[in-house]
Length: 287
View 1 (cartoon, rainbow, N blue to C red):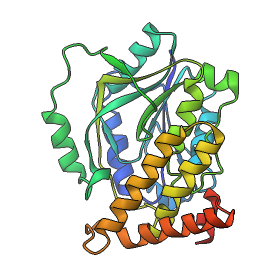
View 2 (cartoon, helix red, strand yellow; view 1 turned 90 degrees about the vertical axis):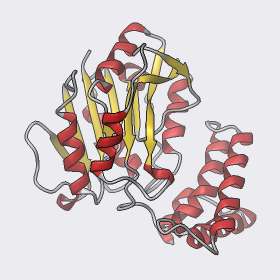
View 3 (cartoon, rainbow, N blue to C red; view 1 turned 90 degrees about the horizontal axis):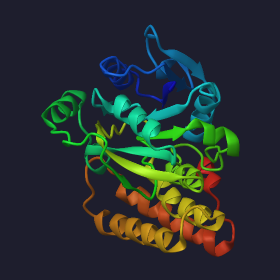
């Protein structure tokens, strides 16, 4: 198989360099490593062996540009620019795709996710990864609802056959774009979570959407995807209610890394737009 690793990056050159350095430790080296950025400042000094190219800023646009570049590959592994993959991540991913032709999407096991807290510095992420104990069966896998955007792999033959794209109506940080595109792929095969493909998501806060925009997306995007048919309404409603309640409850005493009041204001603005009949994900570009 030809396996590519694709990274869409924006505003994190120092962390990106560390992630790319760690990818050199993969026991199964990627045939291509594709880094899509918006400006030269996003990547710092280019590293040898990496294919750098630009696309308009926005995660969906950048990921689509990567898929276009990876048209000659069998598997495309998307990693976030702050995801540290265990050395055998690519090898396990390739082995599962080779052994199970019905699989169209895999997502790994995130042993620590800094997105749910203040985030991890690179050194701490490496320590967590080094202390991890992989499963005895590296091929162990379980059905999963969707791929998690920080580490998900696509069977490219299915992408090409069905013209599947990341939805560019979800701009900027693109809340739930990973859910949408992997559910589209899942109509043509299985989505698996791999026990043996492991890593740490640093959850860097640099480059994230401001609270107001993120809060708007937490309401607008689930509704958009439910109307589109890639996200069941019961899940969409639970997601919106959970984030609205959390943002409201924590606004008086927010975590240092989260703009809870901004998110809550974004939630309420989206609900007001819903009532007026003008709710759309792209509205965040006007906020």
